[in-house]
Image (tube, rainbow, N blue to C red; front, top):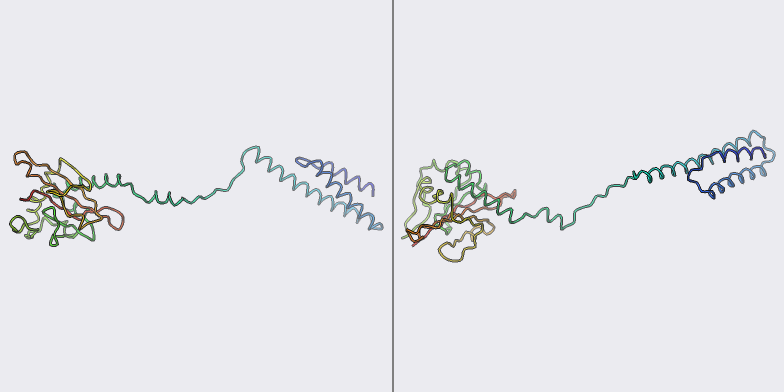
Length: 274
């Protein structure tokens, strides 16, 4: 049996130590030796062949335990030395403030965009490109026309589809009332020439987005009819020859559609009324 102990002890010494501490190795060595002694005292008459099998089994178990510990130590050492320790990616949900910032629109950028769209529409009105004009019109609300600054209950509204061929329509519509309560009765083409007069606003004296005009000759009731609208005013100041009383304004009124885009809902003229 002494020889068996010696064989096991020699094999234990040959195992690689790597990161095992001396106390750990001594403890494991003592555990294996104690197991051999217990087996020797409890089974004195067992044949050498059986004892050898036990020794081999215990040695194998000890070796496997050591190799497992050594393998873990080697992996840990390599990861620490090379800095290749993989960390799980953390998924961070945006805070409520960040979510709000993502969905909010910059008011100034929105105003610039709508002003640019309004300038494009003035060019379209000047060139009488009705198909293009129709593409700007609100699909559900159509396009309202008011020949003067105040929208009336009888102001004409044309659908998006009607706008594409409006100038081909030879019907004389009553667009509103003028001085002495006479009717403004014109074909669509005549209305564009005499009332809208887009050429006056190709190089306006002022372009105002949501103009804050005090009560007076340039005031309107647009916000009463379209409280959520964005309004772009093109203003022609008039001439000294007529003491500026020939001033005119063209208001293009936009409202958001269901997709969040701004569509044209009204063209409102403004001019001096005696």
